[in-house]
Length: 143
Image (cartoon, rainbow, N blue to C red; front, side, top):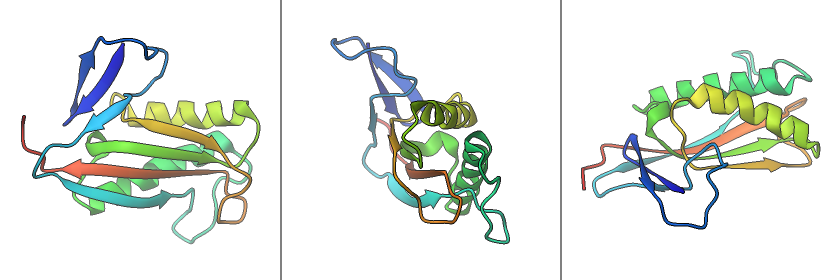
């Protein structure tokens, strides 16, 4: 079953062969009149600029989600306006990627925008393990 995200609702298209295992939509559609918001990577940074919590993939993922929500709000958007996320985890261990994804998935719920999850060698800040890059759309007109 192929899932498509349109506006703030999920529509279902039953054409094969894509798997229904993924916990996100496979595609997002933005309609004419939408304003796209491209967000810088949401990092696990405290207000003082320090990485927090050090060494904790799940904890850093939660801070990233909270910082993403703040960035979205500053741009006049919310989690339900997300049309794409890319999650970076500084680890080659799949268990770390899954741990970060579970926190992010739950933090975005019930919204399920298309997402890519990547393990990378390093991220930009000292002790940083997780980063969420995102695109949102607001003000889309109907079909």
